[in-house]
Amino acid sequence: MGHSTMRAALIYQHATEARSMELADRLNELVRAQRGKGAEG
Image (cartoon, rainbow, N blue to C red):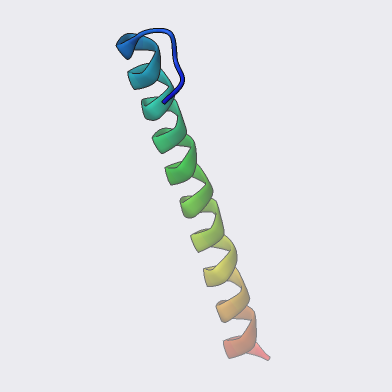
């Protein structure tokens, strides 16, 4: 992975995975909001 230690690689991997989940959750909220607008109008 290019990190100096296995620990550094695992920390980076965990942080990246957590951020990916946050982004996916936010995108899901945006999609649901847009779908809700379509049903109302």
